[in-house]
Image (tube, rainbow, N blue to C red; front, side, top):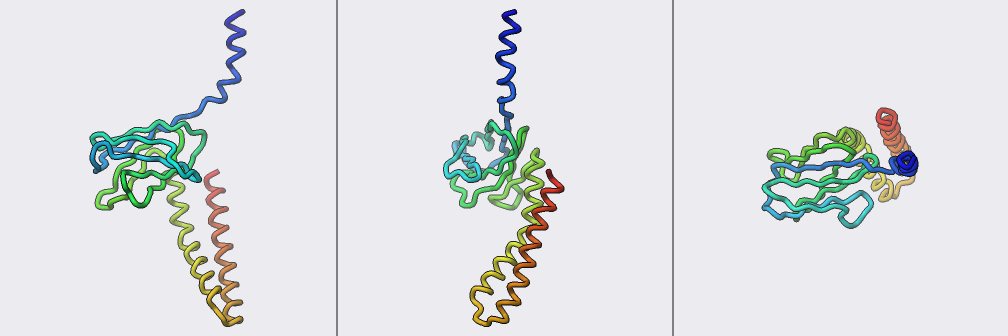
Length: 168
């Protein structure tokens, strides 16, 4: 009876267990004890840190769902975007591309990179059109640019919608 009561008491807490993302880095060409920082999107401070040892590092991150993080290796100027999800994820430098990394083991990361590649040209075009609209003194020119701007915004929204539909 005591065992049954104990089980009934702890069963509700099983739903609160978090999944783990095991992030490992390999062949990182930096000295030992170089700091590895992982910053969750929207945060200003690192949520996880490690030190490089023999070109490797390992981090265990409690994670419920795919989440965007930024990885900083040492004094790296530009952080690396990495979409983490529960499971085992590896990161390795891309050969001949300093500061660029290959991520394996995260389907969310692959989907995110594809999304960025599809949407970036439209976002850049929208930004350029906005600049042209804001600097144009000709009303007719501005009106025609606004039509193109709105069409480009609609294109951005279609890319977002199709990505969500394809990757629920």
